[in-house]
Image (cartoon, rainbow, N blue to C red; front, side, top):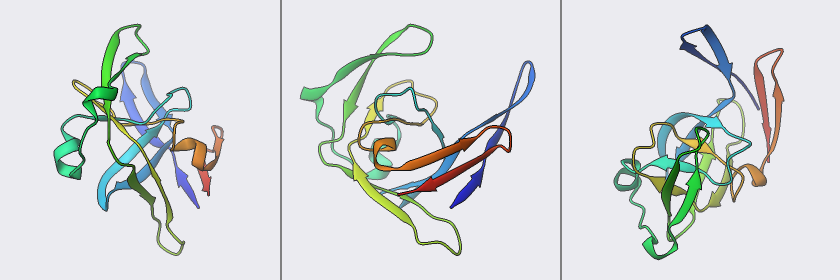
Length: 133
C-alpha cells in the first residue's frame, strides 16, 4: 500500500515529509511522522487518556531530541495495537510498546516495536511511501 508524503509549510516554503495514517487501539490519530532516526515511538502525553493506556512509570527513560535537549518519556505497560488502513487493501496491523512525553507536539513513529515490524520504502523524488508488513 502506498501513501503520498504530507506537505508542511515552514519559513523557507514547503517541505514534504513521510507520514502514515495511524490508528492506535482503534482510535485514528492522523498522519504520523515516520522518523527512522527515532529509537521509539513517542506520542504526546495527552493521547494517553484518549487511548486508555496505562503507563509504566518505573521504566521511564531519558531521550535527547533533535535540538539536543533532554526529555523523559514513559512507556505503556502493555503493547498497543497499531493499524494502517487504506481502502481496497488489507489493514497492516501489529502491536508494540509506545512512549508518552510531556510537551511533545509531534507524534513520531520510531524503530522499537514499530518501524522494525514493517518494510517501508521512501521515494523522496516521487514523495511517496510504500508500506508492507
